[in-house]
Image 1 (cartoon, one colour):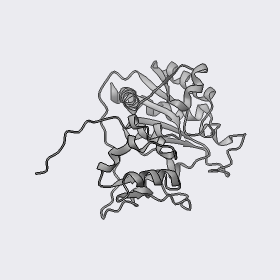
Image 2 (cartoon, helix red, strand yellow; image 1 turned 30 degrees about the vertical axis):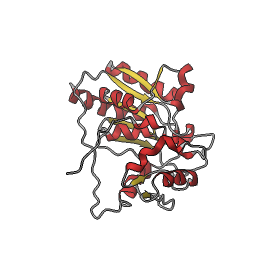
Image 3 (cartoon, helix red, strand yellow; image 1 turned 90 degrees about the vertical axis):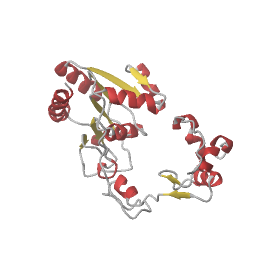
Length: 257
């Protein structure tokens, strides 16, 4: 048997991996990369600085997935899985069983990686109020660095770590948000997840999970990269949205009781 050294587990957020996209990154802070046999990166394909920094840390075992921009209706998760250098490839939905708790609140995440992808705060507040009045449950607005600007608009909890986010997800009853990484995490955790898509395509980027629900208008101009001022693709009808949401929320409340 091999002799294993004692390993101290640390949150990946601690290492601030975004610094590796900078030419001034202090690579001495990332020497732990040298301990891995292979590094598989899902990001940075076209970023020369990031690739260079990773290769300096572990030059003999670096593999990065190419993003194929020509693929327009092939989900990115399936594309990445099929890029794995393994003989057997199988896509499996998450079957995480969230802890049974008194789930009396739902999550609203108003942000994303781009403000151009976000539905309006007024729309979310309208949805929020109608759900709260009908089901008598509380809401919790969450965000990260990108959503700090909303602190003067609504009561939002700014989260600093993935652990905080997972704790809230595991305690909630459902999630409402935009096309974002948080929505993907929510769906992967098997939480009932409602996601609004506008200029981006759910055929490629929809959160995958057994309880993932996507709202998408699929206009003649969708998807696009123009991010027009009208944002017709993000102007959903509250009544139509709630008709779908309320039935699923009622089922979820019953299953959690």
